[in-house]
Image 1 (cartoon, rainbow, N blue to C red):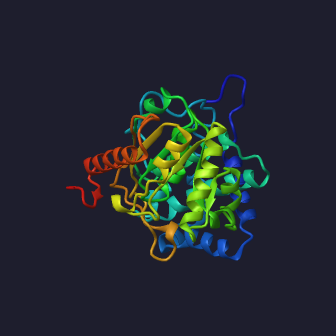
Image 2 (cartoon, one colour):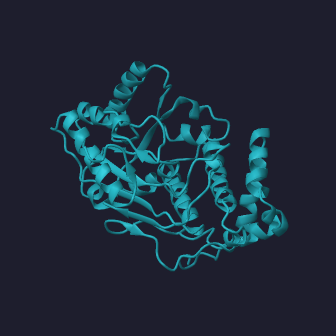
Image 3 (cartoon, one colour):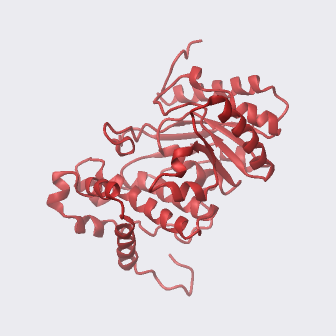
Length: 334
Protein backbone atom coordinates (compact mmCIF):
# COMPACT_ATOMS: atom_id res chain seq x y z
CA UNK A 1 0.00 0.00 0.00
CA UNK A 2 1.25 3.54 -0.64
CA UNK A 3 2.24 5.75 2.32
CA UNK A 4 -0.44 7.93 3.87
CA UNK A 5 -1.25 10.91 1.68
CA UNK A 6 0.03 9.31 -1.54
CA UNK A 7 -2.77 8.45 -4.00
CA UNK A 8 -3.22 4.87 -5.16
CA UNK A 9 -1.37 4.49 -8.50
CA UNK A 10 -3.47 3.90 -11.62
CA UNK A 11 -2.08 0.45 -12.43
CA UNK A 12 -3.78 0.21 -15.80
CA UNK A 13 -2.39 3.55 -16.94
CA UNK A 14 1.08 2.66 -15.65
CA UNK A 15 1.04 -0.66 -17.45
CA UNK A 16 -0.25 0.89 -20.68
CA UNK A 17 2.51 3.53 -20.50
CA UNK A 18 5.10 0.78 -20.05
CA UNK A 19 3.72 -1.00 -23.12
CA UNK A 20 3.88 2.19 -25.20
CA UNK A 21 7.45 2.77 -24.07
CA UNK A 22 8.44 -0.74 -25.14
CA UNK A 23 6.87 -0.19 -28.55
CA UNK A 24 8.56 3.19 -28.94
CA UNK A 25 11.97 1.66 -28.24
CA UNK A 26 11.53 -1.11 -30.79
CA UNK A 27 13.14 0.91 -33.56
CA UNK A 28 15.54 -1.78 -34.67
CA UNK A 29 14.47 -4.43 -37.14
CA UNK A 30 16.18 -7.23 -35.26
CA UNK A 31 14.50 -6.23 -32.02
CA UNK A 32 11.12 -5.99 -33.73
CA UNK A 33 11.48 -9.56 -34.95
CA UNK A 34 12.57 -10.64 -31.47
CA UNK A 35 9.58 -8.89 -29.88
CA UNK A 36 7.18 -10.55 -32.33
CA UNK A 37 8.63 -13.94 -31.48
CA UNK A 38 8.42 -13.36 -27.73
CA UNK A 39 4.93 -11.88 -27.80
CA UNK A 40 3.33 -14.01 -30.51
CA UNK A 41 5.60 -17.03 -30.83
CA UNK A 42 3.12 -19.73 -29.88
CA UNK A 43 -0.29 -20.67 -31.23
CA UNK A 44 -1.78 -20.47 -27.75
CA UNK A 45 -0.68 -16.86 -27.48
CA UNK A 46 -2.10 -16.02 -30.90
CA UNK A 47 -5.46 -17.48 -29.86
CA UNK A 48 -5.51 -15.73 -26.50
CA UNK A 49 -4.54 -12.36 -27.94
CA UNK A 50 -1.89 -9.95 -26.74
CA UNK A 51 -4.36 -7.62 -25.03
CA UNK A 52 -5.44 -10.36 -22.66
CA UNK A 53 -1.81 -10.97 -21.69
CA UNK A 54 -1.20 -7.26 -21.22
CA UNK A 55 -4.20 -6.92 -18.91
CA UNK A 56 -3.28 -9.99 -16.85
CA UNK A 57 0.18 -8.51 -16.35
CA UNK A 58 -1.27 -5.74 -14.23
CA UNK A 59 -1.14 -7.96 -11.17
CA UNK A 60 2.18 -7.50 -9.45
CA UNK A 61 3.45 -4.82 -11.82
CA UNK A 62 3.85 -2.28 -9.01
CA UNK A 63 4.41 -4.56 -6.04
CA UNK A 64 7.28 -3.29 -3.94
CA UNK A 65 7.24 0.20 -5.45
CA UNK A 66 7.45 1.80 -1.98
CA UNK A 67 9.91 -0.72 -0.48
CA UNK A 68 12.94 0.77 1.28
CA UNK A 69 14.90 -2.49 1.48
CA UNK A 70 14.72 -5.79 -0.35
CA UNK A 71 15.83 -8.47 2.11
CA UNK A 72 15.92 -8.81 5.86
CA UNK A 73 18.14 -11.23 7.75
CA UNK A 74 20.64 -13.63 6.27
CA UNK A 75 18.65 -14.62 3.18
CA UNK A 76 15.44 -14.98 1.29
CA UNK A 77 13.10 -17.79 0.30
CA UNK A 78 10.22 -17.30 -2.11
CA UNK A 79 7.05 -17.13 0.03
CA UNK A 80 4.78 -20.13 -0.52
CA UNK A 81 1.76 -17.90 -1.22
CA UNK A 82 3.30 -16.35 -4.35
CA UNK A 83 1.56 -17.91 -7.32
CA UNK A 84 2.06 -17.90 -11.07
CA UNK A 85 0.60 -15.20 -13.28
CA UNK A 86 -2.63 -16.10 -15.03
CA UNK A 87 -0.99 -15.34 -18.39
CA UNK A 88 1.84 -17.77 -17.66
CA UNK A 89 -0.66 -20.53 -16.88
CA UNK A 90 -2.64 -19.66 -19.97
CA UNK A 91 0.42 -20.30 -22.12
CA UNK A 92 0.59 -23.92 -20.95
CA UNK A 93 4.06 -23.90 -19.45
CA UNK A 94 5.89 -22.18 -22.32
CA UNK A 95 8.64 -19.60 -21.92
CA UNK A 96 6.78 -16.79 -23.71
CA UNK A 97 5.36 -14.84 -20.75
CA UNK A 98 8.64 -15.01 -18.87
CA UNK A 99 10.59 -13.51 -21.77
CA UNK A 100 7.94 -10.86 -22.33
CA UNK A 101 8.22 -9.77 -18.68
CA UNK A 102 12.02 -9.63 -18.94
CA UNK A 103 11.88 -7.63 -22.16
CA UNK A 104 9.54 -5.14 -20.50
CA UNK A 105 11.86 -4.62 -17.52
CA UNK A 106 14.87 -4.24 -19.80
CA UNK A 107 13.01 -1.67 -21.90
CA UNK A 108 12.34 0.44 -18.79
CA UNK A 109 16.00 0.20 -17.74
CA UNK A 110 17.16 1.13 -21.24
CA UNK A 111 14.90 4.19 -21.30
CA UNK A 112 16.39 5.48 -18.02
CA UNK A 113 19.94 4.69 -19.18
CA UNK A 114 19.47 6.59 -22.43
CA UNK A 115 18.35 9.62 -20.43
CA UNK A 116 21.44 9.17 -18.21
CA UNK A 117 19.23 8.66 -15.18
CA UNK A 118 20.26 5.07 -14.43
CA UNK A 119 22.14 4.84 -11.14
CA UNK A 120 22.63 2.18 -8.43
CA UNK A 121 19.06 2.62 -7.18
CA UNK A 122 17.68 1.95 -10.67
CA UNK A 123 20.05 -1.01 -11.01
CA UNK A 124 18.63 -2.52 -7.82
CA UNK A 125 15.03 -1.93 -8.94
CA UNK A 126 15.73 -3.65 -12.27
CA UNK A 127 17.32 -6.57 -10.45
CA UNK A 128 14.39 -6.89 -8.05
CA UNK A 129 11.92 -6.80 -10.95
CA UNK A 130 13.78 -9.65 -12.65
CA UNK A 131 13.65 -11.67 -9.43
CA UNK A 132 9.90 -11.12 -9.29
CA UNK A 133 9.57 -12.19 -12.94
CA UNK A 134 11.02 -15.59 -12.05
CA UNK A 135 8.57 -15.96 -9.17
CA UNK A 136 5.63 -14.78 -11.30
CA UNK A 137 6.40 -17.60 -13.73
CA UNK A 138 6.48 -20.34 -11.10
CA UNK A 139 10.14 -20.18 -10.10
CA UNK A 140 11.41 -20.50 -6.53
CA UNK A 141 14.44 -18.62 -5.20
CA UNK A 142 16.60 -19.37 -2.17
CA UNK A 143 19.31 -16.95 -1.03
CA UNK A 144 21.62 -17.25 1.98
CA UNK A 145 24.81 -15.71 3.35
CA UNK A 146 23.79 -12.06 3.09
CA UNK A 147 24.98 -11.45 6.65
CA UNK A 148 28.52 -12.14 5.46
CA UNK A 149 28.26 -9.06 3.23
CA UNK A 150 26.31 -7.01 5.77
CA UNK A 151 28.88 -7.50 8.53
CA UNK A 152 31.98 -6.80 6.42
CA UNK A 153 33.46 -3.54 5.15
CA UNK A 154 33.41 -3.00 1.37
CA UNK A 155 34.74 -3.03 -1.26
CA UNK A 156 34.80 -6.71 -2.18
CA UNK A 157 35.67 -8.96 -5.08
CA UNK A 158 32.89 -11.50 -5.65
CA UNK A 159 33.77 -14.65 -7.61
CA UNK A 160 31.15 -17.17 -8.69
CA UNK A 161 30.37 -19.89 -11.15
CA UNK A 162 28.50 -18.80 -14.28
CA UNK A 163 25.45 -20.82 -15.30
CA UNK A 164 22.90 -18.52 -16.96
CA UNK A 165 21.83 -14.89 -17.37
CA UNK A 166 20.00 -15.05 -14.03
CA UNK A 167 23.05 -14.29 -11.89
CA UNK A 168 23.82 -11.18 -13.93
CA UNK A 169 20.29 -9.92 -13.35
CA UNK A 170 19.81 -10.96 -9.70
CA UNK A 171 23.14 -10.42 -7.94
CA UNK A 172 22.85 -6.59 -7.92
CA UNK A 173 19.73 -6.56 -5.72
CA UNK A 174 21.52 -8.78 -3.18
CA UNK A 175 24.72 -6.72 -3.08
CA UNK A 176 23.76 -3.08 -3.76
CA UNK A 177 22.05 -2.51 -0.37
CA UNK A 178 25.49 -3.06 1.19
CA UNK A 179 28.03 -2.06 -1.47
CA UNK A 180 28.16 -0.32 -4.83
CA UNK A 181 29.05 -2.95 -7.41
CA UNK A 182 29.70 -3.53 -11.10
CA UNK A 183 30.81 -6.34 -13.41
CA UNK A 184 33.58 -7.42 -15.73
CA UNK A 185 31.84 -7.81 -19.12
CA UNK A 186 32.60 -8.47 -22.76
CA UNK A 187 33.46 -5.29 -24.63
CA UNK A 188 30.87 -6.11 -27.29
CA UNK A 189 28.07 -5.71 -24.73
CA UNK A 190 28.87 -2.00 -24.40
CA UNK A 191 28.18 -1.61 -28.12
CA UNK A 192 25.06 -3.79 -28.16
CA UNK A 193 22.20 -2.03 -29.94
CA UNK A 194 19.78 -2.73 -27.10
CA UNK A 195 21.65 -3.59 -23.89
CA UNK A 196 24.55 -1.21 -24.54
CA UNK A 197 23.06 1.84 -22.75
CA UNK A 198 22.29 -0.25 -19.65
CA UNK A 199 25.74 -1.82 -19.51
CA UNK A 200 27.52 1.52 -20.03
CA UNK A 201 25.47 3.08 -17.22
CA UNK A 202 26.81 0.43 -14.82
CA UNK A 203 30.40 1.54 -15.58
CA UNK A 204 31.87 -1.97 -15.84
CA UNK A 205 35.31 -3.20 -16.83
CA UNK A 206 35.17 -4.27 -20.47
CA UNK A 207 37.46 -6.94 -21.94
CA UNK A 208 37.80 -8.01 -25.56
CA UNK A 209 38.57 -11.72 -24.96
CA UNK A 210 40.90 -11.70 -27.95
CA UNK A 211 44.18 -11.22 -26.11
CA UNK A 212 44.17 -12.90 -22.70
CA UNK A 213 47.31 -11.08 -21.55
CA UNK A 214 45.90 -7.65 -22.41
CA UNK A 215 42.63 -8.52 -20.68
CA UNK A 216 44.49 -9.57 -17.55
CA UNK A 217 46.48 -6.31 -17.42
CA UNK A 218 43.30 -4.26 -18.00
CA UNK A 219 41.31 -6.06 -15.30
CA UNK A 220 44.10 -5.81 -12.73
CA UNK A 221 44.70 -2.13 -13.49
CA UNK A 222 41.10 -0.99 -13.85
CA UNK A 223 39.93 -3.32 -11.10
CA UNK A 224 42.37 -1.90 -8.59
CA UNK A 225 41.25 1.62 -9.51
CA UNK A 226 37.54 0.76 -9.13
CA UNK A 227 38.12 -1.01 -5.81
CA UNK A 228 40.15 2.00 -4.67
CA UNK A 229 37.07 4.14 -5.36
CA UNK A 230 35.08 1.96 -2.98
CA UNK A 231 33.11 0.04 -5.62
CA UNK A 232 33.01 -3.75 -5.56
CA UNK A 233 33.42 -6.10 -8.52
CA UNK A 234 31.61 -9.27 -9.59
CA UNK A 235 33.86 -11.66 -11.50
CA UNK A 236 32.82 -14.83 -13.33
CA UNK A 237 36.18 -16.54 -13.92
CA UNK A 238 34.70 -19.11 -16.31
CA UNK A 239 35.01 -18.12 -19.96
CA UNK A 240 31.43 -19.13 -20.75
CA UNK A 241 28.19 -20.15 -19.06
CA UNK A 242 27.89 -23.82 -18.19
CA UNK A 243 25.46 -25.93 -16.22
CA UNK A 244 28.33 -28.24 -15.21
CA UNK A 245 30.96 -26.61 -12.99
CA UNK A 246 34.48 -27.40 -14.18
CA UNK A 247 37.18 -26.12 -11.77
CA UNK A 248 39.72 -26.32 -14.60
CA UNK A 249 37.96 -23.45 -16.41
CA UNK A 250 37.69 -21.30 -13.27
CA UNK A 251 40.72 -19.02 -13.52
CA UNK A 252 42.46 -17.17 -10.69
CA UNK A 253 41.65 -13.66 -11.92
CA UNK A 254 39.33 -12.77 -9.05
CA UNK A 255 41.71 -14.03 -6.38
CA UNK A 256 44.66 -12.18 -7.95
CA UNK A 257 42.67 -8.96 -8.13
CA UNK A 258 41.60 -9.22 -4.47
CA UNK A 259 45.20 -9.95 -3.44
CA UNK A 260 46.60 -7.00 -5.39
CA UNK A 261 43.96 -4.55 -4.10
CA UNK A 262 44.07 -6.06 -0.59
CA UNK A 263 40.28 -6.40 -0.30
CA UNK A 264 38.15 -9.35 0.85
CA UNK A 265 37.30 -12.08 -1.65
CA UNK A 266 33.74 -13.42 -1.34
CA UNK A 267 32.95 -16.66 -3.22
CA UNK A 268 29.38 -16.99 -4.50
CA UNK A 269 27.90 -20.40 -5.25
CA UNK A 270 24.87 -20.43 -7.50
CA UNK A 271 22.58 -22.78 -9.36
CA UNK A 272 20.50 -20.97 -11.97
CA UNK A 273 19.62 -23.64 -14.53
CA UNK A 274 15.99 -22.56 -14.17
CA UNK A 275 16.74 -20.60 -17.38
CA UNK A 276 18.65 -22.54 -20.02
CA UNK A 277 20.31 -21.40 -23.23
CA UNK A 278 18.14 -21.16 -26.32
CA UNK A 279 18.86 -23.29 -29.36
CA UNK A 280 18.63 -20.42 -31.84
CA UNK A 281 18.66 -17.29 -29.65
CA UNK A 282 20.91 -17.78 -26.63
CA UNK A 283 18.96 -15.62 -24.19
CA UNK A 284 15.51 -16.90 -25.20
CA UNK A 285 15.96 -20.40 -23.86
CA UNK A 286 13.41 -22.57 -22.07
CA UNK A 287 12.67 -22.26 -18.36
CA UNK A 288 12.31 -25.14 -15.88
CA UNK A 289 9.88 -24.31 -13.10
CA UNK A 290 10.86 -27.42 -11.10
CA UNK A 291 14.45 -26.20 -10.64
CA UNK A 292 15.02 -23.96 -7.61
CA UNK A 293 17.28 -20.93 -8.10
CA UNK A 294 20.02 -21.01 -5.45
CA UNK A 295 22.50 -18.34 -4.29
CA UNK A 296 24.84 -18.59 -1.31
CA UNK A 297 27.60 -16.20 -0.26
CA UNK A 298 30.64 -17.54 1.61
CA UNK A 299 32.38 -15.88 4.51
CA UNK A 300 34.81 -13.25 3.19
CA UNK A 301 38.36 -14.44 2.62
CA UNK A 302 40.25 -11.58 4.20
CA UNK A 303 43.42 -10.06 2.74
CA UNK A 304 46.56 -11.91 3.76
CA UNK A 305 45.92 -15.20 1.96
CA UNK A 306 47.97 -15.92 -1.13
CA UNK A 307 45.89 -15.76 -4.31
CA UNK A 308 46.40 -19.49 -4.91
CA UNK A 309 45.06 -20.40 -1.46
CA UNK A 310 42.10 -18.02 -1.72
CA UNK A 311 41.30 -19.41 -5.16
CA UNK A 312 41.24 -22.98 -3.80
CA UNK A 313 38.95 -21.95 -0.96
CA UNK A 314 36.54 -20.46 -3.50
CA UNK A 315 36.64 -23.63 -5.61
CA UNK A 316 35.94 -25.85 -2.59
CA UNK A 317 33.01 -23.70 -1.44
CA UNK A 318 31.35 -23.49 -4.86
CA UNK A 319 31.79 -27.21 -5.57
CA UNK A 320 30.43 -28.29 -2.18
CA UNK A 321 27.36 -26.06 -2.31
CA UNK A 322 26.56 -26.88 -5.93
CA UNK A 323 26.66 -30.62 -5.26
CA UNK A 324 24.46 -30.20 -2.17
CA UNK A 325 21.79 -28.62 -4.42
CA UNK A 326 21.90 -31.48 -6.90
CA UNK A 327 24.14 -29.69 -9.38
CA UNK A 328 26.98 -31.15 -11.39
CA UNK A 329 30.72 -30.59 -11.05
CA UNK A 330 33.57 -32.23 -12.93
CA UNK A 331 36.32 -33.94 -10.98
CA UNK A 332 34.23 -33.47 -7.85
CA UNK A 333 35.85 -36.55 -6.29
CA UNK A 334 39.40 -35.10 -6.56
